[in-house]
Amino acid sequence: MGKSIFQAAARAELQQRLSRLKPDSAPQWGKMNAPKMVAHLADSSKMALGDLPVRSRKVFIRFPVIKHLIIYVMPWPKSTPTAPELISRAPAAWNGEVVTLSAQIERFGTRSVHDKWPPHPAFGAMSGRLWGALVYRHFDHHFTQFGV
Image 1 (cartoon, rainbow, N blue to C red):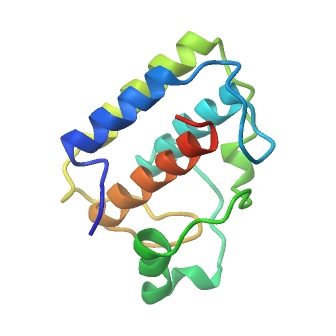
Image 2 (tube, rainbow, N blue to C red):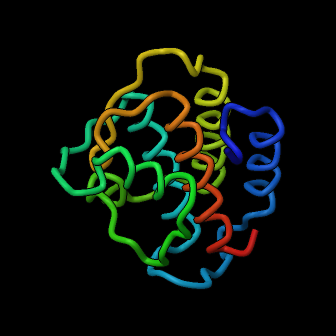
Image 3 (cartoon, rainbow, N blue to C red):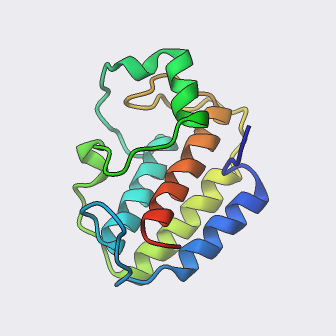
């Protein structure tokens, strides 16, 4: 079905792309700078692990068929709005944010796909398999945004 953060090769790819990112890397679209994007990815993975509460939104993408299409099939639009909780924190020092994000990639990817996973604020109930694909695509989307 595509790449997932649960695949060791996909995690290694994300780690390698993260290592190529620089604090002054310019975005190809959107308003975030590189430090803000790294903080956003770290916070979104904390949300996915159940460590950062994010207000639930009742939106149409909760329907299983639509959720599946968005997570696995459809291209993601640029500059899609995100939960305020995932963009409100000011980034810490660059190296600290990168170390945190790198650790989150490994922490997330080495958790069992069969564990009970928290709901997504927009997609609702999520299996580990769905989370793995969504997190990989989210990282890929933002790393592509910054040319890595």
